[in-house]
Image (tube, rainbow, N blue to C red; front, side, top):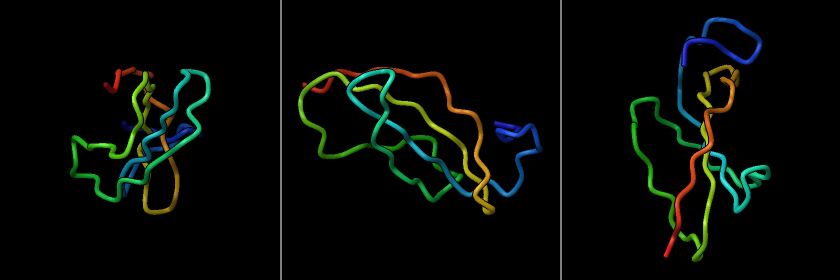
Length: 76
């Protein structure tokens, strides 16, 4: 990500916010990932089923990027 939601330059990237849920239109849960250096993250404790995930980049000031494309995974 290079820009914030309001179109400003994304600076001081501090981490990510992973949004997820069991329907693509309702990503009702989220996890804060407090490290901009991570390029993978394992979500623990999910029940069986199909989940949808998207991510936002977050700056030190709390600015965030647009939400990413939504992807899905089946937990078996």
